[in-house]
Length: 339
Image 1 (cartoon, helix red, strand yellow):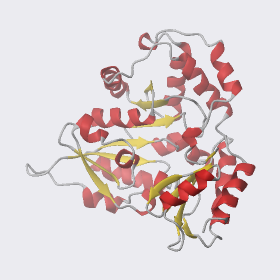
Image 2: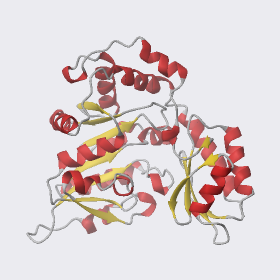
Image 3: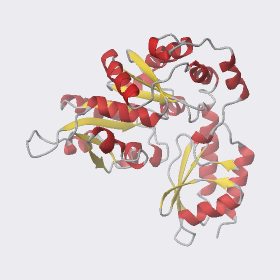
Image 4: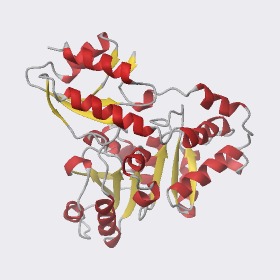
């Protein structure tokens, strides 16, 4: 099967697995696991933060951050297409008791005006606007990259209004590679941010959440409370360190392949629109004369190719280190026979 469903479908390479074999191990909770300590220090530095904690998943990073920054009844402002809304099983409500304020931002991004228009004035009748969550890159907008000036301006509005700020950095390294702008520059001004290792970087498990020392202290409390405290995590974090050394710059190859796929899809009669491709995600809208997204995904799977259904007539295609030009050709050949 040629997996374009998500970059989460990557498998750890043999050298990545071998990196775990001789890793020194210890109890991460006592700061005694050397690879984990090193990884957290390294990611904190990459994001310009004071400290960091290793977590099983990016979803856990988001949910812990929301819980630390808010109180039950508060409101979180984000775009309607944010991961915390469409892919975290109602976690903000179930775990933190917060309301969501979804904003229809262009290409998965807010403008300062968008944010200002949705910050509630103080009132005993309304929830308290408490947290801004931004996503870099914007997944369902086709992996779109927030311009640095725009993200800085939005954060400034949030801070002026007294909001906490959190950056979902699931693919922030894709943004860094695509633009040459360091992850720390995108994260500047945010109270918390994180990096995923299970997507384009190819690791089997893990993400690292960063923030102030006090924030990470609170994050650790929730990590344990929610069952995410682990022990000899060096078997995982050694692979994450390998990924930072060997798999970051190669993200450019994924971007180039995604652009080629997007360009060729846009020429097919069964595709009515392809969003601009900036990183490793292609969002394509099926023409009204074509089958809908569910039927298209079934058809492609029968041809040995997987994609994601993201709306009634929209599909998502994601490139990563486990797909190459031959896989892309098979994908496009399957689309060419779609009728």
